[in-house]
Amino acid sequence: MGKVETWPGRGSFVLAAIGSAIGLGNVWRFPFIAYKYGGGAFILVYLVSLFIIGIPILILEFALGYHFKSSAPGALRRISSRWEWLGWFALLAGFGVVSYYVVVMGWAANYFVYSANLAWGENTESFFFNKVLNLSNSIFSIGSIRLNILLGLIVCWVWILLSIWKGPLTVGRVVYVTVTVPWLILIVFVIRGVTLPGAMEGLKYYLTPNFAQLRNPELWHAAFSQIFFTLTIGFGVMIAYAAFLPPKSDIVNNALLIALADALTAFIAGIAVFATLGYHAYMVGKPVSEVAKGGPSLAFVVYPMIINSLPGARLCGLLFFAMLLTLAVDSAFSLVEAISAGVTERFGWRRWKVNVGIMIVGILVGLIYTTSAGLYWLDVVDHFVTHLGLFSVALLQCIAAGYFYSLRTLRVSINEYSDIKLGKSWEYLIKYLVPPVSIFLLVCSLRKDIISPYGGYPRLATFLGGWLPIFLFVIISIVLARIAQKRDAGGFTP
Ligand code: PHE
Image (cartoon, rainbow, N blue to C red; front, side):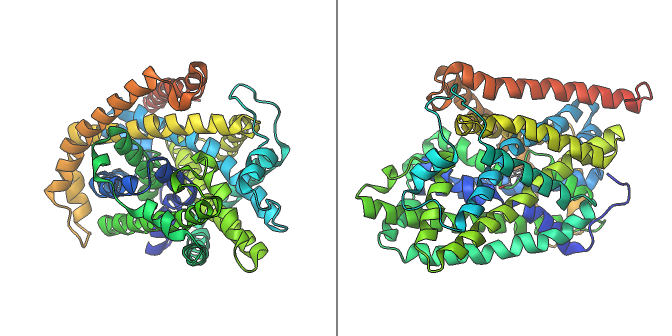
């Protein structure tokens, strides 16, 4: 990270942070998680989580970056050298997400091409599983690499790198387009979705709250994890972005704006998806809860259905997948920015070299998801990286800032230039609410994952795609923190 880099104008920070937040998490992940956890039951818990943990932790990440003017590893090191590893761990967990995120972008890139002749036809589910993925029937039958997906993966990585080639300052400009256009397209989808026959059943499923579910820890865990994913919390990204802020910035206002814009986008995407599920349920005569397979495939089955029903379907398809890609690209590059900010700051390496390195490792790791068992691996990695990785980072950041630093100092520094003043309740949330609640949820779900492996996959698969990477991330982070600190002390030159 350059010493003097700051955002060109106020709007660009907000847009870049919104750009990082709004992405596939809203349009692709949110609908399938909401579907999996029963629609309305999930939404209620999601909204509560947004206010009690999402926004407070987003403010905390902004505060850390702004106050220490440093990337995640650097900022956490300023709390105590013992915490630096957590910054690296956040970046690695984020990398874990990006490794499959860009593959989903690759799918979208393929769909962009398919739109030209609506290649998916009427049976969008079978098209996705058989033609696009060539899905095998078990996680260990990996078959061979799907060249169409590999090509999509490579094109998307190159695009990500080109978007930030000239540094964070150019990011501010790219996002003006990538953030605004997608909104318009989503609105068209919503209008079409809700006017389809049967749509109301889908919306009922989506919007009827189920209070009994408030007592289900699994649901809370999924909601917290989705909030972290969608607000880009626990990736070290928001810390790095806030480090580029000029002095006298209004953090609280920005955090609220970003969180609300993000939640609204997910909510709107949800309307389009659930209305279409209602329509599909009506057509095939099944209940909404059983009409689709769900999981990471949902978006690629449902959106093409809406597209089929629109006038000018081809053009709508092209626009929609272009939108999905532009939404995703600024999320993906925000993580690359965060990693290279961390590495250049702590190790002094050249930014472009770090970026190219990330791309190469990203493509290599991504290969597993391009195989015929790719969807299964993606599902496992997504579960562990979000439920365990991002979740632990968010929790530990609260502990680090709450118990090893002074939240009051952070609060005072933010409040100085914020219109809305943060009250003491923010400190209480971070210090006394988040840690015990998260530890409880984590223990419940770790227990469950240990007793019966996630998703019914073989134990070896959840070990290789879940426990092992997380364990390696911890070890690598500790090693990186050590090396960086030795370098500080002048005893090590890489
Ligand atoms: N917040 C992003 C989204 O919702 C998630 C993300 C951020 C993914 C950064 C990758 C890198 O899509």
